Image (cartoon, rainbow, N blue to C red; front, side):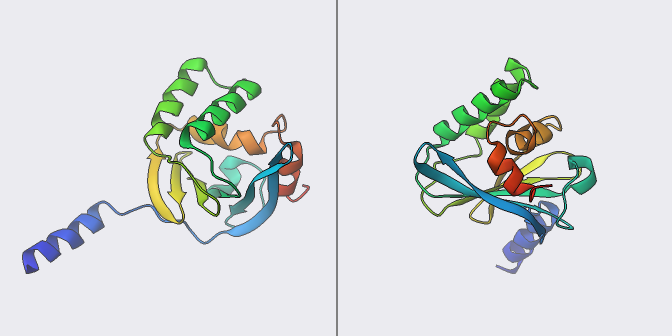
Length: 166
């Protein structure tokens, strides 16, 4: 019994789960599609300001869902947004979509999906505060966050809210 407990403690130390850091709010807003509110979004950084991924990482984007959305719907919408922005190749988009299929799951009303952009530009994902997986491709992080934060986003009102009209 004692040996098993020691093994569990040692494994936890060697492979620590990602944890969401305590960060300051930059801005928040809601995303609507036609008449439906899909989610509330919050953007956080260490000092509550945002002037670029390299300058402010870690950066946390948290989405609180107002309705049920399947994993596949969210992945399809993500790929659509990458195509809209045009900053990644079709091969990258397909690779990232496949990685997200292994991480994300369906969400329901009240679920919180969070993405934490690390200083090395990798991304850790959390569902309701629990780590669910990571994408280690350093090109993925900024291009994923660009969906909400790039000047050419398809949701400029939400972008202004997240950046606190900066």
